[in-house]
Amino acid sequence: MSFRLIDLAKPFGSILPEIEGPYTQLNFDEKVVYTMASAIIYILAQLPLAGVSQSAFAASADPIYWLRPIFAAERGTLLEFGVFPIISTGLILQLLASLRLIRVNFTVRSERELFQNLQKIFALFQYFALTNLFLLSGYFGTGLSLVQVILINVQIFLAGGFFTLISEVIDKGYGFGSGALTFTAVNVATNFVGDVIGINSIETAPEVYEKQGALANLISGLGSKGIFTAIWESFTRTHLPNLIIVLICIAIVLACVYLQNLRYDLSIRSNKARGVSSQYPIKLLYTGALPLVFSFVLLFYINVIAYVTVVGIFNNDSEQLAVKILGHYTANGSNFSIDNLSLFGLFSPASSLIGSLLSPIRTIVFSLFVVYTSVKFAQVWSVTQGSGPRDIAAQFKEQGVTIYGVRDVSIAKYLKDQIPTAAVTGALCLAGLSIAGEFLGTNGRASGIVVAVGVSFSFLEIIASDYQQSGGSQNFGQIFGGF
Amino acid sequence: MAADGLSKLTEQPVEFIKDGAAFVQKYHCYISTEPVLTIDPTEYLKIIRAVGVGFIMMGVVGYAIKLIHIPIRYLIV
Image (cartoon, rainbow over all chains, first blue to last red; front, side):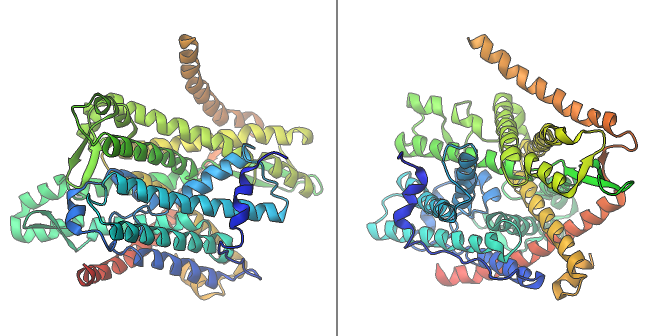
């Protein structure tokens, strides 16, 4: 018998905690409470890391700042890496399983459990590995004592493990949709509100404080700086979100909802009852925002490798040949980015519109990378996962439904043509939207918003269908039904 | 060899755009009664409102919780 990857999880089976699924179907109100509570815990857990001196943090800069929104990662907190390990293991292992690179028989319960444990182990391993790679590269400051190193490791690892379990709670049917993506959505929404009306002050230069929110900044500036300076500054400041970024984000929300709404209606009719016909919608965004998330997972890995090799191994020494080829990090406020033309520099967006225009090669390579990986992912995912073409065809057959103008026998083939194309076109549109946002210098906010809107939209679909089923008899259902 | 790879690289996007365009057009052969890529403007506005309200609600609650963090940070650090 050959070695299988899921067997790796066998020895850990007894020590890994597992969430029991609900015995009965939870009602709508309970689900709302579970989802909201998990999200609130996630936001509450963004406490500063103990054991890291704040001055060391202020001195080091953040190499993954533009990847943070999409993975709900907050710098300098327990959630330093956010839900990245959870999302990346979930996507990659499922992709490998569906490509049959990992052999799992999902019809057998014990194998399903092993696969689930494997996911958990990989997620925890990634929290551990990322923490230590960043420690070695001096991200948490240099010359840390052993106690500090252990403290940082324990904190990030435990927080990561805790949220792996919390997201499993939501995944297993206590909440709506996917747990990790829920955290992303809530975090993106929180930061967006903070970027607009955030009244907390941030020290931008020694002894200079500015409001975090663009609108709050404008209003406080109107009183102290005079109208024209205040308006000019609120549109052009670079170190904190300005009004232009806010407007771009709003435009992206509108465009994203528009894309989410697009669907192709297949006219179907019943074989049994004559004259009964209806529509079967195929959503353009058949795979949701997952293709974009997948692209960003790859970008995250590339950028971590870049940071570890350039800063960790070559000490970011611009004299060395390797650094010249791979890329030299320059600090820009608290952001650490590769701005010269180099290998790793190609895999990150420029931090402003001017930057994107000045480095066209970088912009083009970055865009092509995102588009290509998104599209490939959508192609594979739409065929292999969940309700693929074959399942829908089987479902049609069972219900005695056919598509107008398509013979019964060729329905599966017809859907196999249509669904991947819809998924791929949808993924292309979303990737384009996110790239456009990055090109304009939103530093990852655009992609975060694309994913967050996707998640909110799936909430809306679930809420709408639950509302119809329960007839609005439940408390939260009534509140949401009002919108 | 290299040229082969390059032509493959350029072929794929072109083919892909063709597919996408064909996808939009093809439906007119199958169903001729109505436009296929559908979106209902009133429904769109309703959904925009629902998603917007939900998004802002999530954000305001989240931001309120984050504000609590500021005094906590002072206490801890």
